[in-house]
Length: 277
Image 1: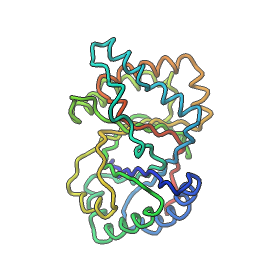
Image 2: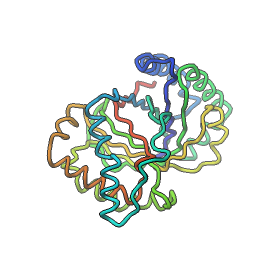
Image 3: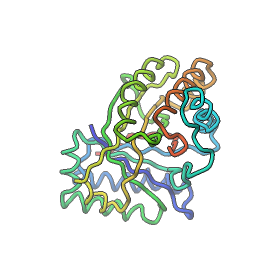
């Protein structure tokens, strides 16, 4: 499976409530109208929670610089710099949408067709007045675990990842899909997640006309981690559990080997699989 993931940062003059209302209403209606031209199988919107949300702050803290520095030093790795680029303000995404396809060929065929280009241009026009910055990421989807019968909406943590220098994208993704994947699946009972996917960013030159029509640059992230729960309450109860706290520390300790946490971007919010007909 392959997704086209589009991350959006609202304009300074657009409130988060207005953006959410537009995306769930006008944007959804437009995507419904354009479904035939876009050719996707599934459409999901993720709306971020308040940045004062205790769950967001807790997750952010578990990936903080002091912990990364401690785990790096303990494993003989260079300590990440406290200063530097860091997580850019424009990468504090407010809404993320994902268009899913059964294969890269299906994605390319649909989105680079005349009808697909025209549809993407209409999506670009719809977002233009509301969004100050956006990025597109073609990704290969590795579905690791999904609890049977899990419904929507879902509370979801998405971490847009960059490789730790000097690792290449290929080396980072190899470590993630093997060693780290085994760790995450082994501690599922403690983490209590109900849906886990790895999204591996692909370099797809054939999609250049489609991305140009969408009017956004291709992002330089290397992957996106997706962990979902049935609702915020499930995750809140879990974070109070010593078992989940220990499991999160084990994840953080391994992540410093291949992820540049300071230059990655966290989104916590609610994911809706919308009724696209």
